[in-house]
Length: 327
Image 1: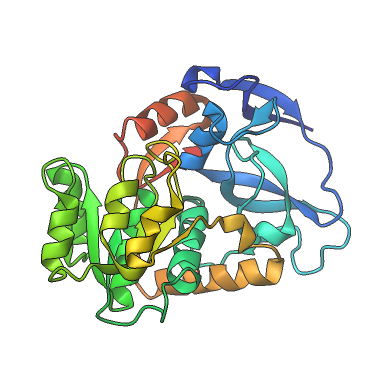
Image 2: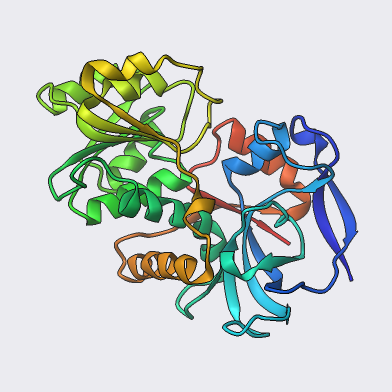
């Protein structure tokens, strides 16, 4: 069957993305075909497009979507035609009307979650889940502990601020500009730092009485690397989970010795290796959303054919919160 898709044949800026018709075969063993109702827009899509993260070419972009199962491959027993699902796939391919997806990365949706919300939150929400539940500093995190979360007004950041607040953590969020800082404050962050106007490290140290924080969650990369390390308490953990400003520069491991710091670079794919684990993580996410403690407003919607505009808005930081493409 033919489906529309946003494909790249070379790496580069948003203009390399083209709307094309591609052939989609039947799902293979352990796969399901999902007819998309909404598609998530994420920074990792721009990394794949630009070549920061290398992908085989030609490539259909996108790793996240929600919709209805149209066909089931052999060996699939827990999902059936007609099921409502969302997914955060390891390989790109979701900027399309439909695609075949491994069941290991596919989550069955509860009726309470609509397709746009699911498409906007599955990858981001599972990311927040593995960060706050499984990527923890020495001794773990407990109510009253302070954390720093960079780019707290972004899609991942907004979910993280709410979730961390629900866990009783003292969230120190950073954002660029008064408008974005107000968003983070309204979401419940205890402290908000405008990195355009303030010294982030000095503010964090003032907030923590010069103790620093147990953990910094950094999805920005190059621009925040040094200040993230400087915000940490002795034996603190630096979690580098994204590169919105580009990859961090190479650094000397000796930079960690003064405070015996830890650094990790986790990825979602290593946490979603089986369907059972992925569904358990998703159920935790869906429960947080159902409780009302984490809200997922979809702030921007773009037709699939306007994916170039969506990427330009994303990379120029015009977007706030979650965005979706609509087939």
